[in-house]
Amino acid sequence: MELESLYDLLQLPKGVEPPAEEELPQEPEPPLSR
Image (cartoon, rainbow, N blue to C red; front, side, top):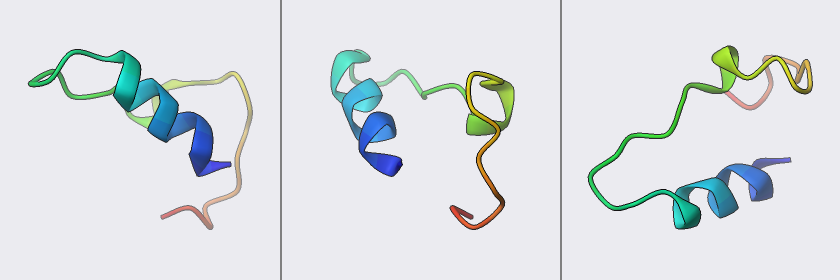
């Protein structure tokens, strides 16, 4: 779900890039999000 990514972006301060989804082993999402 990309919604979680959007929430993470909102939580992160502006100017700070969010960690690549690949680095988040929390949920092995399929390569469809790319």
